[in-house]
Amino acid sequence: MKSQTIFLTGATGLVGSQLTEALSQHSFRVKALSRNKQLQVKGVEWIVSDILSSDLMLCKQLEGADVIIHNAACLKA
View 1 (spheres, rainbow, N blue to C red):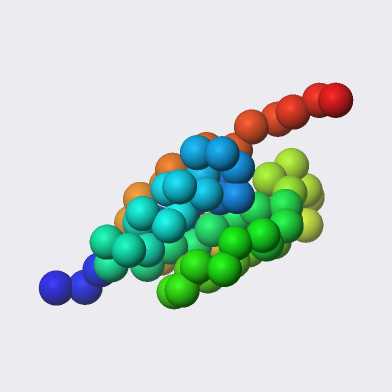
View 2: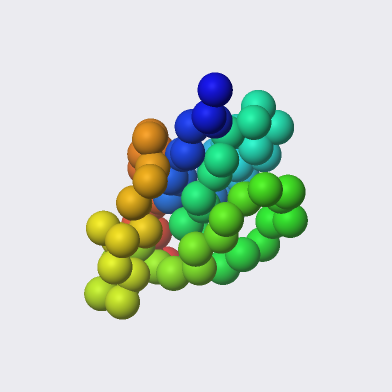
């Protein structure tokens, strides 16, 4: 059986970093979106971009995803 592909936004945040590691350990294929790649997790495909960026081409990045977990937050300092 083919492992599911999960597209995860906010992959390096408090919750997202835990999800990224847990999903990869349970044989899911993870496409992780983050503003910066901070984690070294085996088997994770990193997409370094801001979710609000017009250059992201989100539809293209979502191709092949079986599940989407939207975990990104918009933080204003």
